[in-house]
Length: 256
Image 1 (cartoon, rainbow, N blue to C red):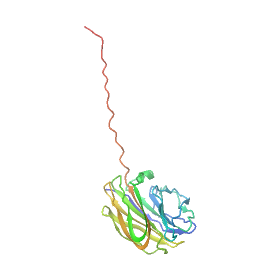
Image 2 (cartoon, rainbow, N blue to C red):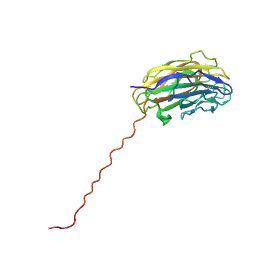
Image 3 (cartoon, rainbow, N blue to C red):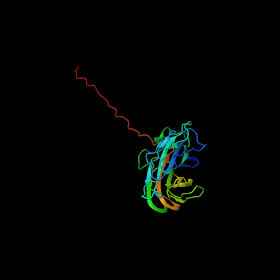
Image 4 (cartoon, rainbow, N blue to C red):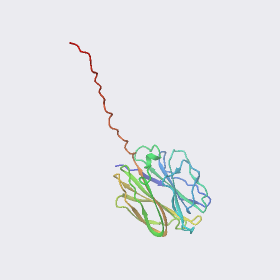
């Protein structure tokens, strides 16, 4: 078995008029990178894309009439070309809080974004917005299309409004996944603040992941997204051989 691996996370970036989000210095050309941004349920776009495009499962929105409760997870992705720099978000309104996570294939590199993850919504990813303030986090399961996938769980919250340094997420569970590991857990205080988290697990056999859960330390709405990335592309369709047509020529002449 060979799974994609988590390489590193960049430092959390924040700002009230946009943010420059720097990837880990450990990344190399061909790595798959996710840019995760939390906003006050406001639209996030990039003034400098640096090769990132929006993920098809993004955004995950948790609206509220109370601004300090509303949150949104916006996700961008790229395969790093070895040259593109750091992305910069536009001013979304109240604040932008973001980080970049880097992943690597066990051998070789991914050829394109569709090679990394399923292109079918509901199979390769699933959004789970939770608009009830509590500390129970839940991710809707997905169905993987190849063996040996790395399954990761992303979350954005409007709270806590602190300048980082406090662990927010714990007790990550999924009976179907192995090697469950937290990858990122950090908050920021720009504007009305927010928090981003991520944990991963592995699924050796193609199929359903089932639901994942975790526990938060702060009562909040939760913008959750589960996604799988492949170590190998799906097997191609093997067509049956074409039928062989044999033609016989009939000699109609009579020779005695």
